[in-house]
Amino acid sequence: MPIINFEFRNEVLKHNASLSYCYQCSTCSGGCPVALITGGSYNPRKIIEEAILGLQDKLVEKQEPNPWLCSTCQTCVELCPQKVELTEIFTLIKNECFNTGNVPEAFVAQGRAILENGVAIPYSKAIISRRVKLGLPSIKTASPDEIQKILKITKFEDHIPKEGV
Amino acid sequence: MTFDLFLGCVIPARLPFLEASSRKVFEKLGIKLNDVEGFSCCPDPTGIELIDHKAWLALGARNLSLSNNNGGIISFCSGCVETLKGVNYNIRKDSMVKDEVNEILKNIGKKYDGTTNVKHFAEVLYENIDKVRENVVHPLNGFKVAVHYGCHYLRPSEIINWDDPFDPITIDEIVRALGADSLEYELKMECCGNPLDKSDKDISLKMIDNKFKSIQESGANCVTLVCPACFQQFDFNQRELSKDKEVGYDFPIFYLSELVALAFGFKPEELGLNFHRVRTSSLLEGF
Image 1 (cartoon, chains in turn yellow, purple):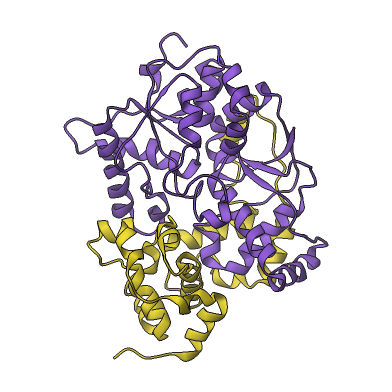
Image 2: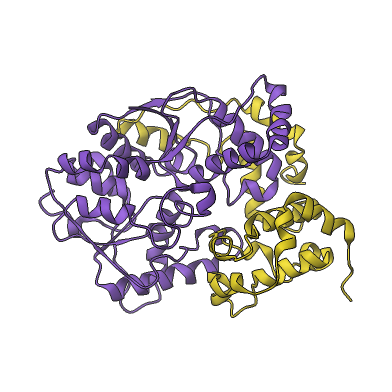
């Protein structure tokens, strides 16, 4: 049986109060390209319903429906007659998933790249020489120290396990 | 007119040829792009924000704080634009968010007041469309273009605050200003599926396959777009989709800046068009 978690519900509401405006009309799911392709097994209306009810175990642990299937196309946000900011709410749910570690590996890898380099894609030797051939200037990106400081204060780094551990 | 250039990660470090055409176009238009030292990842609104919203806000605000130019920031990437406009939106509408972000930035000796304006390069091209038209020396006759706007160039409209979120016109008009045709197709406004590459490759490929089917029905002979994530989805994954088909797709994928640069008389070699996975030569005889 699903467990209602009031604390979780309050946390979502605190992050984005627009959650409380939802009257479950399903316009979001009707316009969602991923709902269409998955035959409705991905369903933004259902995610919002579970958030309103505080069903943290369904959303964060079991991930039914799977919030990682949102393509962030923002169609639902645009269509919602109640101006519920669905993508923002899904962001918080995905942030919560990082607290449990139940997340697709590719996101962790991207997070690690930022943590180590300050950019998502470090400049390889091949790219540097290609840039020269194309007549492009060399780029001075952020000092990783400064970025790491921010990622430490915000506890972002706690979500990225050390490689090989 | 001068802007601070925010390059982000994907274009300069993976698809630098897109940067080459973009820089050439703006130089030709007499719009100066400043290179600024010290930018980090924007950070990615379809990746890093999903790990931690607050870190996304703080890194975004740090980037915005580095621009002190009158024209604000210009970016060649829709993802960067969405992040930077989104961070501005959050900071401008809620002073508590602004204080919280500045509390973090204090630790690295920076602060951000929310005043840096952000523009997508296609926005600036559209605002200068007469100048674009005047610079065309090689009209793109015979180019039947399927325009893919991509999601983050348009939505959420309250944050992006530019073209219509479901019935946009800006890129179509730029394409026509170059002498090319812009063709309508049924799935024009659909997402390309790129962000799902990280969580479910099959769904991601199905989404782009559907787009290509629709583009095929329209009679278009190429695609144009304005986002490096969309570019990778359309160009890199087109071959992969064609593997299992009797007749595969064969649509050259042009960044909007590449079409503009070709019409301005730049040569395919100097734009690095040979770095595309899908050959572009079918349309480039005489260029």
